[in-house]
Length: 188
Image (cartoon, rainbow, N blue to C red; front, top):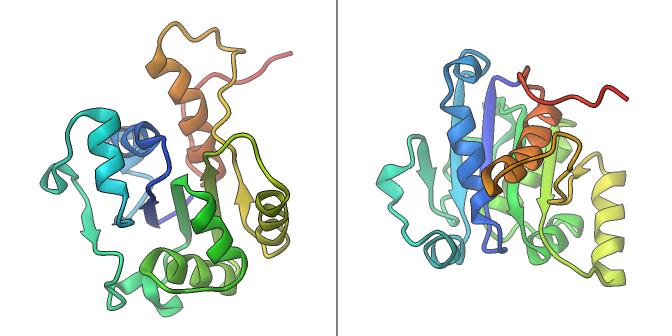
């Protein structure tokens, strides 16, 4: 069960995934499963969030947020003990920088720290179709210990709304992060 979590939000399409993860983390049954959550947004994350969801107010995010250039953030160092990092949505540019060790902002630096400390990095990638560069970058991150979790919904639970469809993806991410969830499970 993760205790200290970083949620990074990039400018890839799919702000709804980050929003759904934040909402889930506020549920009482999940709040008892972590100690703290920190959030960092890329330069384009706010603009994409506004475009896709119609609004963005950093003050409405119930967790401490960090600027993408704030290298004094606690999770910029392995000694801070953050066990899990989720990047949702994860752009292909962010994936590429992580794959090649280019720590030019707080998101890529935190991901580098998580990988070097052999902790859990989950990238909710959001792109289609994929080119060979994307696939190779996914391979590199996977070989380094990261988990690539494409934003691919499942239909086993017969979702009846967009929110339920989104939840099939975000519940999977939270399960990968180590959370115990009351969610649909395939029974065969």
